[in-house]
Length: 313
Image (cartoon, rainbow, N blue to C red; front, side):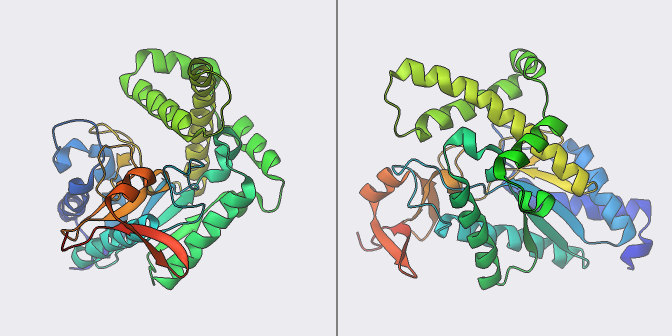
């Protein structure tokens, strides 16, 4: 079969097979697991690449920076959680290549600078995280992955100027966002999830718990505005790409939520947690403070990497 001359029926069949590879990793809060037919938008996008015999292109906003809460993470640089997640994403692209020879590549759209000022992480720490991601991808030989961030779009402009430019050009208005959150259950779930993360990640608040929650609810609107703006910018720069998301997504949504590693809930990510190597050989993501009670700290290249349980324990 020549991919470049795939008939519509064959392109549809190959696209469904590719989507079937993604479905076990779908990140969603819904109980039912959908079939490929529940994702018509993604099937159409994949089929567009297949008809041309071109490599699939996925974009994944995420991998922004580590949480500033030391009870949740091991430090400010990528560790075993990112290492395992990047390897998983490359392996998914490799699995696609085995059934569709042109293969796939995935662009990690590192979004830390977009809302770093709202989550309390300094820009130099965000740069260090993204730079280490690139180095890690190279060291692991993950040739199907690449990293895209604001430096690729706006160069050496000051970070505040970059944020202002993206917000003014792409962000929804606050009024429209509030209206959507009032009427859309999935938008409301995202708003609540981000608010919860902001509360948990604010380690140095000196006021009351209620004042912190009020402050974080306001900041959550800003994070969502900037996140939407980043998504629109990505769409401009990668107009035909299949959009993945690290947030839970309903069946048939424009974005396909993807779970990177096993975790206790659908919201946990490597940058909000630490990796624990369990005694049975499996991995999970949990807050650092909890992982420290369950296993011993393991260093890699002189830096904290993950926690490990004793197999004989």
